[in-house]
Length: 331
Image (tube, rainbow, N blue to C red):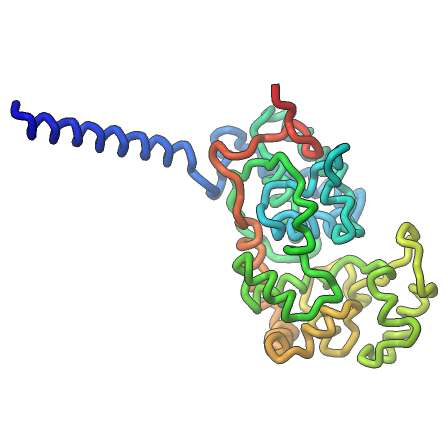
């Protein structure tokens, strides 16, 4: 065989080898998919569903925690359960940051993890538990069933230093809030739908006293103000005190489109709720969702799917934590 022929054969062999290697890599790095655990832990999603139902029977407010968790974890750079990591001597955990004020019930994530570890040790990630428990929590409070992919792996570090860049504050302008959501692929109808989460749960007085003291915000519905003042009698509330106002007094335990009717009636507790109802970019969508719950659920489903797929760790990236509040020890 001549020199050119030998070179051609060598190049073809290299090409075939690189194509095979690429195929192997692609096979190893499947990314997110529906029913990721169907072979490795077929009961995984059923176990999470049953655990969430049991916990919801015991503690109704767990459903709101699951819903907040997906937002606070997945909106901050990656959906990798960094939110669940405890603080260390070197690093403050995301849970302890001001932007995470009011987040709780993390110990119940550990209960779900323990149930999964009994069935399939070392298989199901904490980030998938976080995402799937949010889905089940949404259903528990009357929301839509949301098909979600799995296959996430867990990160090893907190992102506390990034929280303010990614998570909008309740006092920020609607323009800033829209921009922050847009950066993770969620458009205006998606944002309006996600804020419909304020249909359930409650808001701590710390977050809303600036609308009541020293003077009542004139944009608040005057019929709603006495109730807010009764629930928040102090201009400087104790953050540890149980001083809350229900987000929706009509259907406080149901995820529905009543929130949109409330904010159009100036009964939104947070500044962002008021802006959502009155900004020209969002008001038409708010009005449509107030009239049409199916439209709200459709956009809410789409937004949760986008949020849950934000920059996950898959394949060989990250790890499967043994405990959700601690990164694995590296030997």
